[in-house]
Image 1 (cartoon, helix red, strand yellow):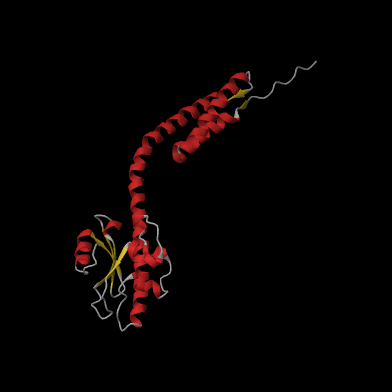
Image 2 (image 1 turned 45 degrees about the horizontal axis):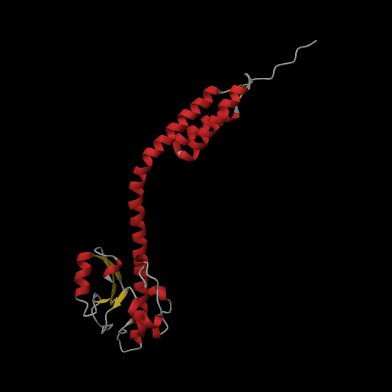
Length: 222
């Protein structure tokens, strides 16, 4: 009578996955691959032990556990340093985006003011309410600087809540570098602000230049 053929010895799949994921995690993905590698390693070892020799790969599973745990430990150590580098960069990018939107708002003001001046003997509007009444600026968000996180109010009271200042008594014949409007100091405390000039250009100015320019803009300065 023929003896039964013993089942072939094969490597435990979880052991292979453990080492493979651990190496991938160590090289690039960090805990996203290292944590599954550790889980697979812990699943593989008891299965190999209980298989009575029909499964192999204990060394692979142990190697996966070691490399996986080392990868996790390294990422725990590295993560604070990465955050220390990335968070300021993200903050700077957010501030740059806010300044860009703010500058775009002021350009909209400049375009509407130029259109108003064409029909009023070259005189720019004395206040934002006058500009709103022309219908050229009917979106309340245009009067809010995103850096303040303020919510826009009613357009009927725009001059009471807007984050911008419109300099009165300006004319299109004034020098192009004359200040027509600017973001209020509380938009970017101690950093500067965006300034709209009579020629329609908008410029970000550091605190020193900003303070000097709005100081000479007239009695409407905050």
